[in-house]
Length: 65
Image 1 (cartoon, rainbow, N blue to C red):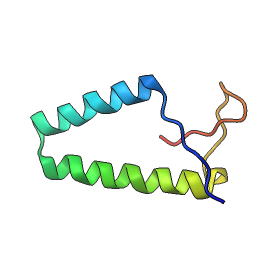
Image 2: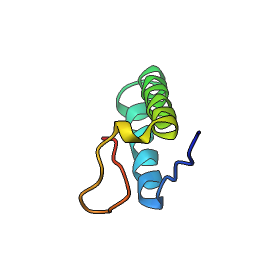
Image 3: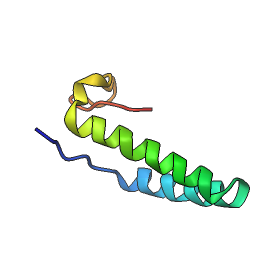
Image 4: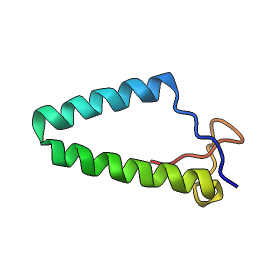
């Protein structure tokens, strides 16, 4: 069963800044590769969240870093 992944506003802002940084300092290809890896990990989280460790700070949540 696929689960819903919620991206916090803080995470959205950080990702946006990271995408800008990658384009300014690296290349569109590097940004694209990062997004592919991010999408892959989000799909793993949706299908098998138990793969990732539980957050010590927020019970019931898992983290992927």
